[in-house]
Image 1 (cartoon, rainbow, N blue to C red):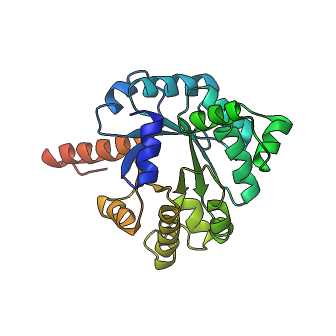
Image 2: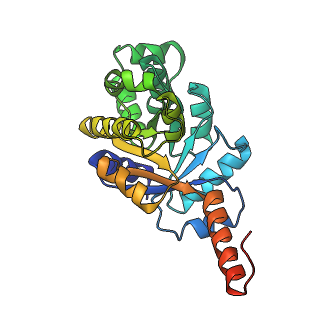
Image 3: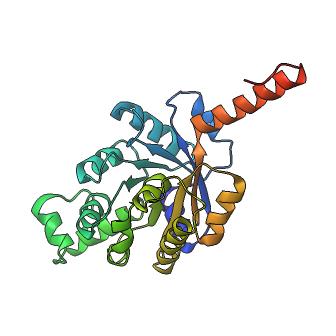
Length: 261
């Protein structure tokens, strides 16, 4: 799948699936490419991946037809352009709460490579030369811009955020959102689920993707999809490894009469 194809599926409401990739091992892409994924999610906000490693991972997964979506450490336009320079198909900017933050990231991702005063003029609605406008528009279709919604202030500003052109999707950060709501890690709480549904429904009504990164059961994931999500990042390579290794070792111990650890 190309980045443009992934973007088209997101905004048209088709359901797409990815997972968080932590390991930069050169053996990992071959395994991941046979797992039925539509894209991969690489997180540089919480995971220690340097710029060279990130670029290698992006280039490799892109070559395998798995567009790499990179979460940058902060809503910084320069961090976004570095991720794109390294081969990212799209950027997720964390903990965004204001229209100003969204506009700045839109400039870096969707108006690439324009910078400085010219970029500010474009963001302010100024005239753009016809050839440049076509160039920017064509390039924007190949790069995804996804906004992390992770707090009550972001929820309060959601309508204004969605009015900013160029956003391809919203992604819920469930841990931070639950903490901001005052119900940390209570992912079955009605208040948390209501917030998720509001985000999903408003994103879909705006014609963009609605997503969440979650690591729970199949039943929990199904519930998010039924609430309106069409963009699911399921678990992570390290979490899946831990879960399946623990379960299988437990089964082996049980089979020979050794108490599970």
